[in-house]
Image 1 (cartoon, helix red, strand yellow):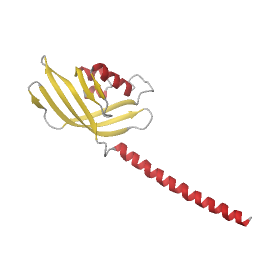
Image 2 (cartoon, helix red, strand yellow):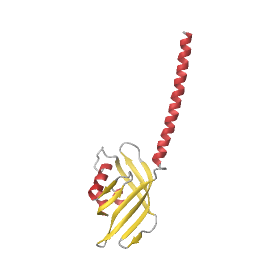
Image 3 (spheres, helix red, strand yellow):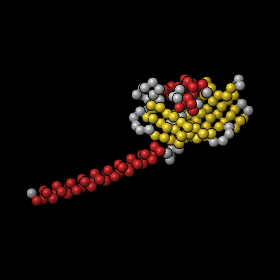
Length: 162
């Protein structure tokens, strides 16, 4: 699955999934079944150079947190990811994320039936970037305010002399 993501190969990704698999993406959107999963991915990632997608590409490095837990023909695993996003309209950014997967063994083959991707919405690189922009905006607003007051004082003083 990771190789499919890093190659931007949706066919390789869905080949690991059951036909009725559900994916909960990082933006909390749900896709159900291969057609829905492929449609979401094609809408988000510009695999064919489309400018209306959000990302040029998306790569990840995943680690398993602990051995999978087996419940007969059902297995559950989870871990962490370091995701790198290459947006079309801004600079590259990284997010540390978590994942969990449920796999089912059918006809001797393991397939993903549920994949959940998530990131910390309270503390992440994008929020840090927004906080920095707010500080820059506040500093710029303060500077503009001081210059405006000084300009008004200068004009009033000049008008009084005239």
